[in-house]
Length: 311
Image (cartoon, rainbow, N blue to C red; front, side, top):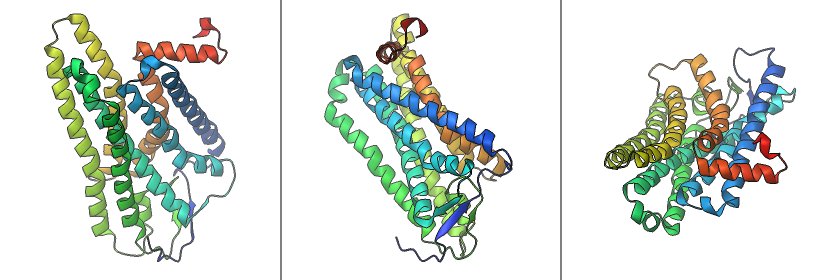
């Protein structure tokens, strides 16, 4: 990527309309971030330490937890740094890295939700062939594929954004470097690139959502053919956590990137929720809806010294 810009650093202005609230925001966002780290690390420990959870579903959940640890870190660490009274400056390379990794990890999560929907379809539709269809090799290929295609998408969007000249204003009216706010600072006509970016950003989540919808249509059809009421209940239960997580992930994406008329105030709120709150809620969603994982979490917490009566 050729840097034709005379701008060597950018100034992150933070979340608009929050002047004077730095201490409150620092405390609030630090709490969110620490709970996110703790929750996802516990999920990883619970899955790794329990051989009963060494299945494709939990393999993909492990990768999702890793993404949920790094995704908020991309923007939150720098935000916490300047909210605590430090410099708001970020280097050109740092801004490029923020934009790349935010879209790389975000796309990876989107692809992971799609793969997990397919995994649930195979588990419910073909239970006797599940371990054959979702073998170790297939899971590894699917996991690597999510990262590979996410890298291509993020590289394209980052190159698209930073091949523009940045030769004047360097104040980013946001708390991290993202495509819409960076295009406002470019010293060139960005209308064509905005359209290309809009199509590219929109194509990935819409394609994934269509595949997820297809998988769940097949899942509903398979569940309706289960004769046992208990069997239907268990099948719906295994899907409910995944569906909740999908809604929490895709609703902010649609609201932020696919609005016909962007609303800055709405975008700011939704982006903060997407970057900080959703990764914190995912461990709760999956652990509270799954008896096996709750049992494994209790064992992990007991090993860490928490008394059984508190678990």
